[in-house]
Image 1 (cartoon, rainbow, N blue to C red):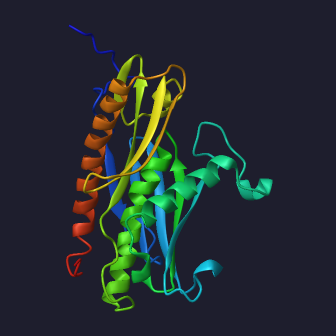
Image 2 (cartoon, rainbow, N blue to C red):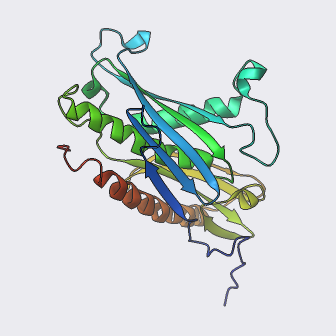
Image 3 (cartoon, rainbow, N blue to C red):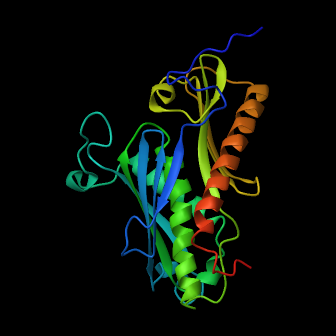
Length: 251
């Protein structure tokens, strides 16, 4: 019988951390959501503007984009604000592009008209999985903003094809695990971030062998765990949004 090594927080290999999503955190915004994934907490805010990037002017198409940042004391030691340094770091740029790509993959951009929806994702507290939490929470904030636009008849129909969420998987102490906290993420042999839709399609896979290569069999095991996590997150998104979109024709 194979012995299963205990995880640092006592979870089983296929068990996620507790996750909650609260909405309406920022009353002035068209949509907002606060997501807690274990000890990771991210504030996601959607803002609608009647403009598009220059390459979309005159196209009739809208745009969905994202900005991502961490508060100075989101981690154990203070990190200077990137604005004080004078430039964004490579990690920040990579993550905000990932968030934008993920949300655009499920949005009918022409259904927005020439409008931009920006998702501001600010990490209040970090304990691993911040980009995954940001994508999951930002999708809820985006849906709330779209609901407002439909109610006000600013756009003619519901443009979100389905929800999108993200989770992490990895190999720690030789076993595949779901939803890595920082203690595991920093020591993992293999680390994956998986973005997927509510219907079970993948949007993006970011994976690498940090310490040891992995087999095709282990990859299959990791993706199966990721699907389990994504299914749980999609169900939570549906539950949360159900309270806000009951009066909206989702087509």
